[in-house]
Length: 388
Length: 160
Figure 1 (cartoon, rainbow over the protein chains, first blue to last red):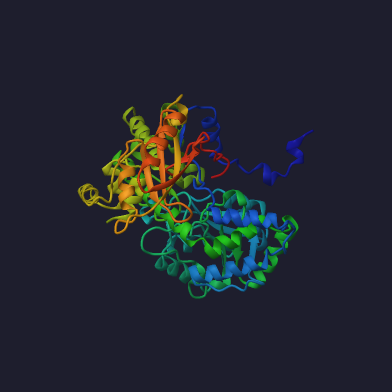
Figure 2 (tube, rainbow over the protein chains, first blue to last red):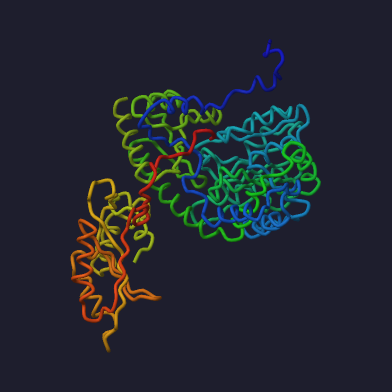
């Protein structure tokens, strides 16, 4: 069969994720020290697991409402109000999804007409661009810069807005850069968008992993922004619940009604067991999250200081759980650096270019690892640098 | 007293002072001074390795002994606890709520040796009225460290 002719050209044109290659190499090697995984190393806190188990014991194994369990939506609504000071009606403005990813996909599809332009800041998580293309949209890349702490600046945004601009994706705290948008940064973006019809898809999956004394601020809280914003969040990163596949989207009722249509036909509903566990997470999980965050914070300091000490300039990542050191001083490209490092010292990090071309000159190192593991990786990288 | 520092040390007491300083946002001198102070105050009592003795043949056996004790007037349980804890065979001693009074962890080379120690030493202490010996058959977790399983990182490399 001529599959090339049969398959959708839109899908065929999508490049496989740039990170795969390194994991494929890593999988064939022994003694690999990986800083590659974007997944918490803590197991889901026991009380949350127990809530899932208990729901199974009680035989709660049926579909939930398409929107998700009402009790969970009420919990989400309360949590979002408590943490980010934005109110959403649990009946018509909160959708429970299969991870944050599904929420992002459904939102992009709900708002995109063929030819619509979606502004995507990069370096960022790899899904926005392919999802936009699959929805018939046109990705417009906004290249954030290290000297701006990888924030979206109002000038950059203004320069990219055209009559076809449909939405801005705002992925903060940012994977892979660790960049965050503080209140004043968001105010400036809001100022640009206020008199336009441009949507905001705010991917806040790492919101609770914001370090320093200021808590995460959602753009939906900024005046005039709630009506145009869908806030996406989830349980994977905050509560160490990656395998449960559970996220949510909150937005204005007319938008969420359409997003839910897509979710209804594609997914039916998010896994019920996960939904019961998630209620426990939101209602009683603060302490467990604080303990994990404290641990991440110490690892963060360790890895940042470690990179700087061995001569790879690393800005302080203020959110998520990645360090994004600059490797330009080695004269290597990001890919060369990662490939040579893995063969020479068996350390896996991800080239910045996996997250967009503007990631050239950087690598992503996750610190979801024990301090001993991080120290060993740094020792090996230091040894590698001396051979260059 | 620095709780964060204590927590780190209780997890791994062999972390370099330099790393602790970075992780806690302190100077190395501050970390050293805090540790010294906590040692002097007796808050930190020692540093030990967590060893999976079961991997060695005949390393040692241990037992938890429940002691019922008649407390002495004015001294309570302190007097007998002090006697019990002086034996080198005794690993730990706790005063318990519930049906017995002291929980004593004892180790020895063989079951017989431990049994003999209980019969000859612990049960003959004046105020001890009864003992019940529970031998440990297998250690699954010790001092928060899991001894079972490979400890391998099972996270896949599936996603970013």
